[in-house]
Length: 377
Image (cartoon, rainbow, N blue to C red; front, side, top):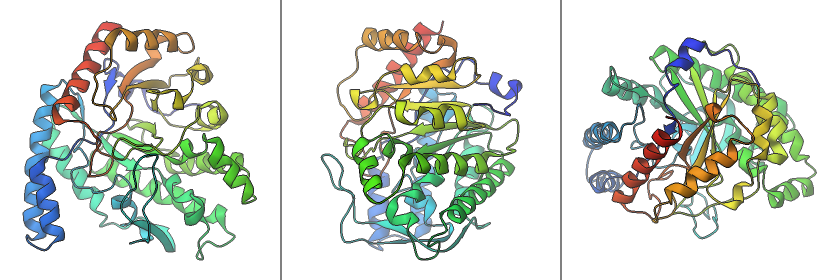
Protein backbone atom coordinates (compact mmCIF):
# COMPACT_ATOMS: atom_id res chain seq x y z
CA UNK A 1 0.00 0.00 0.00
CA UNK A 2 1.48 3.33 -1.08
CA UNK A 3 0.13 6.72 -2.11
CA UNK A 4 1.49 9.57 -4.18
CA UNK A 5 -0.40 12.13 -2.05
CA UNK A 6 1.99 14.81 -0.82
CA UNK A 7 2.68 15.34 2.86
CA UNK A 8 1.54 18.94 2.44
CA UNK A 9 -1.89 17.74 1.25
CA UNK A 10 -2.17 15.20 4.07
CA UNK A 11 -1.12 17.78 6.65
CA UNK A 12 -4.36 19.69 6.04
CA UNK A 13 -6.24 16.82 7.68
CA UNK A 14 -3.84 15.91 10.46
CA UNK A 15 -6.25 17.20 13.12
CA UNK A 16 -9.33 15.82 11.37
CA UNK A 17 -9.94 12.65 13.40
CA UNK A 18 -13.74 12.48 13.07
CA UNK A 19 -15.58 12.19 9.81
CA UNK A 20 -19.08 11.51 8.56
CA UNK A 21 -19.72 9.35 5.51
CA UNK A 22 -21.62 11.92 3.48
CA UNK A 23 -25.37 11.32 3.36
CA UNK A 24 -27.87 12.87 5.77
CA UNK A 25 -31.59 12.45 6.40
CA UNK A 26 -33.56 14.38 3.81
CA UNK A 27 -35.50 17.36 5.21
CA UNK A 28 -39.28 17.09 4.83
CA UNK A 29 -39.39 20.07 2.47
CA UNK A 30 -36.89 18.37 0.16
CA UNK A 31 -38.76 15.06 0.28
CA UNK A 32 -41.99 16.82 -0.68
CA UNK A 33 -40.30 18.66 -3.55
CA UNK A 34 -38.89 15.40 -4.94
CA UNK A 35 -42.31 13.73 -4.73
CA UNK A 36 -43.96 16.75 -6.37
CA UNK A 37 -41.40 16.71 -9.17
CA UNK A 38 -41.95 12.97 -9.75
CA UNK A 39 -45.70 13.65 -9.92
CA UNK A 40 -45.09 16.60 -12.31
CA UNK A 41 -46.56 19.08 -9.84
CA UNK A 42 -43.45 21.28 -9.98
CA UNK A 43 -40.77 21.92 -12.61
CA UNK A 44 -37.15 20.82 -12.33
CA UNK A 45 -36.07 24.43 -11.76
CA UNK A 46 -38.24 24.59 -8.62
CA UNK A 47 -36.78 21.30 -7.35
CA UNK A 48 -33.25 22.63 -7.85
CA UNK A 49 -34.10 25.75 -5.88
CA UNK A 50 -35.30 23.64 -2.96
CA UNK A 51 -32.20 21.44 -3.18
CA UNK A 52 -29.94 24.49 -3.21
CA UNK A 53 -31.61 26.01 -0.17
CA UNK A 54 -31.51 22.76 1.81
CA UNK A 55 -27.84 22.17 0.96
CA UNK A 56 -26.98 25.67 2.17
CA UNK A 57 -28.84 24.90 5.39
CA UNK A 58 -27.03 21.55 5.74
CA UNK A 59 -23.68 23.28 5.35
CA UNK A 60 -24.60 25.66 8.18
CA UNK A 61 -25.54 22.70 10.39
CA UNK A 62 -22.29 20.90 9.55
CA UNK A 63 -20.43 24.06 10.47
CA UNK A 64 -22.29 24.21 13.79
CA UNK A 65 -21.18 20.62 14.41
CA UNK A 66 -17.49 21.45 13.81
CA UNK A 67 -17.22 19.56 10.52
CA UNK A 68 -14.15 20.64 8.60
CA UNK A 69 -14.96 18.24 5.75
CA UNK A 70 -18.45 18.72 4.31
CA UNK A 71 -20.75 17.16 1.72
CA UNK A 72 -24.07 18.08 0.14
CA UNK A 73 -25.70 15.23 2.07
CA UNK A 74 -26.61 13.42 -1.18
CA UNK A 75 -29.55 15.84 -1.27
CA UNK A 76 -29.61 15.74 -5.08
CA UNK A 77 -29.72 11.94 -5.15
CA UNK A 78 -32.40 9.35 -4.61
CA UNK A 79 -29.79 6.57 -4.51
CA UNK A 80 -26.15 6.80 -3.43
CA UNK A 81 -25.03 4.95 -6.57
CA UNK A 82 -27.62 4.78 -9.36
CA UNK A 83 -27.95 8.56 -9.70
CA UNK A 84 -24.28 8.69 -10.67
CA UNK A 85 -23.95 5.44 -12.63
CA UNK A 86 -27.01 5.94 -14.85
CA UNK A 87 -25.49 9.11 -16.33
CA UNK A 88 -22.32 7.38 -17.56
CA UNK A 89 -22.15 6.51 -21.25
CA UNK A 90 -22.97 2.85 -21.80
CA UNK A 91 -25.10 2.49 -18.65
CA UNK A 92 -28.88 2.73 -18.55
CA UNK A 93 -31.30 2.70 -15.61
CA UNK A 94 -34.58 0.81 -15.65
CA UNK A 95 -37.41 -0.36 -13.42
CA UNK A 96 -37.10 -3.97 -12.32
CA UNK A 97 -39.73 -6.48 -11.25
CA UNK A 98 -38.40 -6.75 -7.68
CA UNK A 99 -36.24 -4.61 -5.44
CA UNK A 100 -33.06 -5.73 -3.70
CA UNK A 101 -33.88 -7.70 -0.55
CA UNK A 102 -32.07 -6.45 2.54
CA UNK A 103 -32.09 -8.28 5.86
CA UNK A 104 -35.28 -6.55 7.02
CA UNK A 105 -36.34 -4.40 4.08
CA UNK A 106 -36.84 -4.35 0.31
CA UNK A 107 -35.57 -1.48 -1.83
CA UNK A 108 -37.49 0.09 -4.69
CA UNK A 109 -37.54 -1.93 -7.94
CA UNK A 110 -34.77 -0.15 -9.83
CA UNK A 111 -31.38 -1.02 -11.31
CA UNK A 112 -28.88 -0.21 -14.05
CA UNK A 113 -27.58 -2.26 -16.97
CA UNK A 114 -24.74 -2.07 -19.47
CA UNK A 115 -25.78 -1.23 -23.04
CA UNK A 116 -22.50 -0.06 -24.61
CA UNK A 117 -18.93 1.04 -24.05
CA UNK A 118 -18.69 2.66 -20.62
CA UNK A 119 -17.26 6.18 -20.61
CA UNK A 120 -17.56 9.54 -18.83
CA UNK A 121 -19.56 12.25 -20.64
CA UNK A 122 -18.38 15.85 -20.30
CA UNK A 123 -21.86 16.97 -19.25
CA UNK A 124 -22.23 14.47 -16.38
CA UNK A 125 -24.35 16.15 -13.65
CA UNK A 126 -21.81 15.33 -10.92
CA UNK A 127 -19.64 18.23 -12.12
CA UNK A 128 -22.36 20.85 -11.61
CA UNK A 129 -23.23 19.25 -8.27
CA UNK A 130 -19.65 19.47 -7.06
CA UNK A 131 -19.26 23.01 -8.42
CA UNK A 132 -22.17 24.17 -6.27
CA UNK A 133 -20.79 22.46 -3.15
CA UNK A 134 -17.32 23.87 -3.74
CA UNK A 135 -18.60 27.42 -4.05
CA UNK A 136 -20.87 27.01 -1.01
CA UNK A 137 -18.03 25.82 1.26
CA UNK A 138 -15.12 27.76 -0.25
CA UNK A 139 -12.95 29.44 2.37
CA UNK A 140 -14.09 27.63 5.52
CA UNK A 141 -14.29 23.87 4.82
CA UNK A 142 -13.17 21.12 2.49
CA UNK A 143 -15.82 19.98 0.03
CA UNK A 144 -15.77 16.18 -0.08
CA UNK A 145 -17.42 14.57 -3.08
CA UNK A 146 -18.74 11.01 -2.75
CA UNK A 147 -18.63 8.58 -5.68
CA UNK A 148 -19.98 5.04 -5.95
CA UNK A 149 -17.10 2.67 -6.65
CA UNK A 150 -16.63 1.41 -10.20
CA UNK A 151 -16.67 -2.04 -8.58
CA UNK A 152 -20.42 -1.70 -8.15
CA UNK A 153 -20.60 -2.79 -11.80
CA UNK A 154 -18.96 -6.15 -11.02
CA UNK A 155 -22.01 -7.87 -9.54
CA UNK A 156 -22.90 -11.01 -11.54
CA UNK A 157 -25.97 -9.58 -13.28
CA UNK A 158 -24.01 -6.49 -14.32
CA UNK A 159 -20.67 -7.95 -15.38
CA UNK A 160 -22.37 -10.74 -17.33
CA UNK A 161 -23.85 -8.44 -19.94
CA UNK A 162 -24.14 -8.88 -23.70
CA UNK A 163 -21.92 -5.95 -24.60
CA UNK A 164 -18.87 -7.16 -22.65
CA UNK A 165 -19.68 -10.86 -23.04
CA UNK A 166 -16.59 -12.93 -22.22
CA UNK A 167 -14.58 -9.70 -21.98
CA UNK A 168 -14.45 -9.06 -18.26
CA UNK A 169 -10.97 -7.61 -18.47
CA UNK A 170 -12.22 -5.06 -21.04
CA UNK A 171 -15.06 -4.11 -18.69
CA UNK A 172 -12.62 -3.61 -15.83
CA UNK A 173 -10.30 -1.59 -18.06
CA UNK A 174 -13.12 0.67 -19.31
CA UNK A 175 -14.41 1.20 -15.76
CA UNK A 176 -10.94 2.18 -14.57
CA UNK A 177 -10.36 4.58 -17.47
CA UNK A 178 -13.84 6.08 -17.06
CA UNK A 179 -13.31 6.78 -13.37
CA UNK A 180 -9.90 8.25 -14.07
CA UNK A 181 -11.71 10.77 -16.29
CA UNK A 182 -14.25 11.39 -13.52
CA UNK A 183 -11.50 12.07 -10.99
CA UNK A 184 -9.57 14.34 -13.37
CA UNK A 185 -12.73 16.31 -14.20
CA UNK A 186 -13.63 16.79 -10.53
CA UNK A 187 -10.06 17.87 -9.81
CA UNK A 188 -10.31 20.51 -12.53
CA UNK A 189 -13.42 21.82 -10.76
CA UNK A 190 -11.34 22.29 -7.60
CA UNK A 191 -12.08 19.02 -5.79
CA UNK A 192 -9.26 17.93 -3.48
CA UNK A 193 -11.02 15.21 -1.47
CA UNK A 194 -12.92 12.30 -3.03
CA UNK A 195 -14.62 9.50 -1.11
CA UNK A 196 -15.24 6.27 -3.03
CA UNK A 197 -18.07 4.15 -1.62
CA UNK A 198 -17.65 0.44 -2.27
CA UNK A 199 -20.17 -2.27 -1.37
CA UNK A 200 -18.71 -4.97 -3.62
CA UNK A 201 -15.66 -5.42 -1.40
CA UNK A 202 -18.11 -6.10 1.45
CA UNK A 203 -19.92 -8.59 -0.79
CA UNK A 204 -16.59 -10.42 -1.14
CA UNK A 205 -16.27 -10.57 2.66
CA UNK A 206 -19.52 -12.55 2.92
CA UNK A 207 -19.05 -16.34 2.88
CA UNK A 208 -22.57 -16.91 1.53
CA UNK A 209 -21.96 -14.59 -1.43
CA UNK A 210 -18.54 -16.11 -2.06
CA UNK A 211 -20.12 -19.56 -2.20
CA UNK A 212 -22.67 -18.31 -4.75
CA UNK A 213 -19.82 -17.06 -6.94
CA UNK A 214 -18.06 -20.41 -6.66
CA UNK A 215 -21.28 -22.13 -7.75
CA UNK A 216 -21.19 -19.88 -10.83
CA UNK A 217 -17.67 -21.11 -11.52
CA UNK A 218 -16.01 -17.88 -10.41
CA UNK A 219 -13.15 -17.59 -7.91
CA UNK A 220 -14.01 -14.75 -5.47
CA UNK A 221 -10.29 -13.96 -5.12
CA UNK A 222 -10.15 -13.29 -8.86
CA UNK A 223 -12.98 -10.79 -8.39
CA UNK A 224 -11.04 -9.13 -5.56
CA UNK A 225 -8.07 -8.82 -7.91
CA UNK A 226 -10.32 -7.18 -10.51
CA UNK A 227 -11.57 -4.73 -7.85
CA UNK A 228 -7.98 -3.74 -7.12
CA UNK A 229 -7.20 -3.40 -10.83
CA UNK A 230 -10.22 -1.18 -11.45
CA UNK A 231 -9.42 1.23 -8.62
CA UNK A 232 -5.70 1.26 -9.31
CA UNK A 233 -6.40 2.21 -12.92
CA UNK A 234 -8.76 4.97 -11.79
CA UNK A 235 -6.28 6.36 -9.26
CA UNK A 236 -3.09 5.92 -11.27
CA UNK A 237 -1.05 9.13 -11.48
CA UNK A 238 -3.72 11.09 -9.63
CA UNK A 239 -2.75 14.65 -8.62
CA UNK A 240 -0.50 14.69 -5.55
CA UNK A 241 -2.72 17.15 -3.68
CA UNK A 242 -5.85 15.02 -4.11
CA UNK A 243 -6.81 12.95 -1.05
CA UNK A 244 -8.71 9.69 -1.61
CA UNK A 245 -10.84 7.88 0.97
CA UNK A 246 -12.38 4.43 0.45
CA UNK A 247 -15.52 3.53 2.40
CA UNK A 248 -16.55 -0.14 2.64
CA UNK A 249 -20.30 -0.54 3.21
CA UNK A 250 -22.25 -3.73 3.98
CA UNK A 251 -25.57 -2.31 2.87
CA UNK A 252 -27.54 0.61 4.31
CA UNK A 253 -31.28 0.97 3.67
CA UNK A 254 -34.03 1.66 6.21
CA UNK A 255 -31.58 0.61 8.96
CA UNK A 256 -31.12 -2.79 7.32
CA UNK A 257 -28.08 -4.47 5.73
CA UNK A 258 -26.99 -6.95 3.06
CA UNK A 259 -23.65 -8.55 3.92
CA UNK A 260 -21.65 -9.85 6.84
CA UNK A 261 -18.07 -10.97 7.29
CA UNK A 262 -14.76 -9.54 8.49
CA UNK A 263 -12.05 -7.90 6.40
CA UNK A 264 -9.50 -10.69 6.85
CA UNK A 265 -10.54 -12.64 3.77
CA UNK A 266 -9.84 -9.68 1.43
CA UNK A 267 -7.23 -7.88 3.55
CA UNK A 268 -4.26 -8.61 1.28
CA UNK A 269 -6.12 -7.06 -1.67
CA UNK A 270 -7.58 -4.17 0.28
CA UNK A 271 -4.61 -3.21 2.45
CA UNK A 272 -1.61 -4.34 0.40
CA UNK A 273 -2.42 -4.18 -3.32
CA UNK A 274 -4.53 -1.02 -3.59
CA UNK A 275 -2.56 2.13 -4.43
CA UNK A 276 -3.20 5.83 -3.80
CA UNK A 277 -5.84 5.34 -1.09
CA UNK A 278 -5.09 7.66 1.83
CA UNK A 279 -7.94 6.75 4.18
CA UNK A 280 -10.16 3.76 4.77
CA UNK A 281 -13.55 4.47 6.34
CA UNK A 282 -14.53 1.03 7.63
CA UNK A 283 -17.63 -0.38 9.33
CA UNK A 284 -16.94 -1.75 12.81
CA UNK A 285 -20.23 -1.08 14.60
CA UNK A 286 -21.32 -4.75 14.91
CA UNK A 287 -19.80 -8.21 14.96
CA UNK A 288 -20.76 -8.50 11.29
CA UNK A 289 -17.60 -6.54 10.46
CA UNK A 290 -15.19 -8.88 12.24
CA UNK A 291 -12.28 -7.82 14.44
CA UNK A 292 -9.49 -5.26 14.11
CA UNK A 293 -6.67 -7.73 13.42
CA UNK A 294 -6.54 -7.19 9.61
CA UNK A 295 -5.60 -3.54 10.22
CA UNK A 296 -2.10 -4.70 11.20
CA UNK A 297 -1.33 -5.05 7.47
CA UNK A 298 -1.23 -1.24 7.31
CA UNK A 299 1.54 -0.88 9.88
CA UNK A 300 4.53 1.10 8.65
CA UNK A 301 2.44 2.82 5.99
CA UNK A 302 1.04 6.35 5.87
CA UNK A 303 -2.53 5.10 5.37
CA UNK A 304 -5.19 6.02 7.93
CA UNK A 305 -8.15 3.93 9.07
CA UNK A 306 -11.24 5.63 10.43
CA UNK A 307 -13.22 3.23 12.59
CA UNK A 308 -16.96 3.20 11.87
CA UNK A 309 -18.02 2.61 15.46
CA UNK A 310 -20.98 4.99 15.56
CA UNK A 311 -24.07 3.37 14.02
CA UNK A 312 -26.34 5.31 11.69
CA UNK A 313 -28.88 2.50 11.84
CA UNK A 314 -29.87 2.70 15.55
CA UNK A 315 -31.73 5.40 17.42
CA UNK A 316 -29.84 4.68 20.64
CA UNK A 317 -26.75 6.77 21.35
CA UNK A 318 -23.54 4.82 21.86
CA UNK A 319 -21.72 4.74 25.20
CA UNK A 320 -18.68 7.00 24.95
CA UNK A 321 -16.52 4.92 27.27
CA UNK A 322 -17.20 1.73 25.30
CA UNK A 323 -16.33 3.40 22.01
CA UNK A 324 -13.07 4.72 23.42
CA UNK A 325 -12.27 1.24 24.70
CA UNK A 326 -12.79 -0.17 21.20
CA UNK A 327 -10.48 2.47 19.72
CA UNK A 328 -7.81 1.45 22.23
CA UNK A 329 -8.29 -2.19 21.17
CA UNK A 330 -7.81 -1.22 17.53
CA UNK A 331 -4.61 0.65 18.45
CA UNK A 332 -3.07 -2.71 19.42
CA UNK A 333 -2.99 -3.50 15.68
CA UNK A 334 -2.45 -0.05 14.18
CA UNK A 335 -0.88 2.98 15.91
CA UNK A 336 -3.32 5.54 17.29
CA UNK A 337 -1.97 8.28 15.06
CA UNK A 338 -3.09 6.23 12.02
CA UNK A 339 -6.60 5.85 13.41
CA UNK A 340 -9.65 8.08 13.47
CA UNK A 341 -13.37 7.64 14.09
CA UNK A 342 -16.25 7.83 11.65
CA UNK A 343 -19.87 6.89 11.27
CA UNK A 344 -20.53 3.30 10.22
CA UNK A 345 -22.28 4.56 7.06
CA UNK A 346 -24.42 7.45 5.88
CA UNK A 347 -27.67 8.38 7.56
CA UNK A 348 -29.56 8.10 4.27
CA UNK A 349 -27.72 6.21 1.56
CA UNK A 350 -31.09 6.25 -0.19
CA UNK A 351 -33.58 9.07 0.08
CA UNK A 352 -35.87 7.10 2.40
CA UNK A 353 -33.23 7.31 5.15
CA UNK A 354 -32.54 5.10 8.14
CA UNK A 355 -34.94 4.65 11.05
CA UNK A 356 -33.54 7.34 13.29
CA UNK A 357 -34.65 10.88 14.13
CA UNK A 358 -33.15 14.15 12.89
CA UNK A 359 -32.10 15.04 16.44
CA UNK A 360 -30.32 11.71 16.90
CA UNK A 361 -28.45 12.27 13.65
CA UNK A 362 -26.79 15.39 15.05
CA UNK A 363 -26.31 13.91 18.53
CA UNK A 364 -24.27 11.10 17.00
CA UNK A 365 -22.13 13.60 15.10
CA UNK A 366 -21.56 15.53 18.33
CA UNK A 367 -20.63 12.33 20.19
CA UNK A 368 -18.14 11.41 17.49
CA UNK A 369 -16.48 14.82 17.74
CA UNK A 370 -16.31 14.57 21.54
CA UNK A 371 -14.65 11.17 21.35
CA UNK A 372 -12.11 12.40 18.80
CA UNK A 373 -11.24 15.39 20.97
CA UNK A 374 -10.73 13.14 23.99
CA UNK A 375 -8.74 10.35 22.30
CA UNK A 376 -6.55 12.43 19.97
CA UNK A 377 -5.74 15.35 22.26
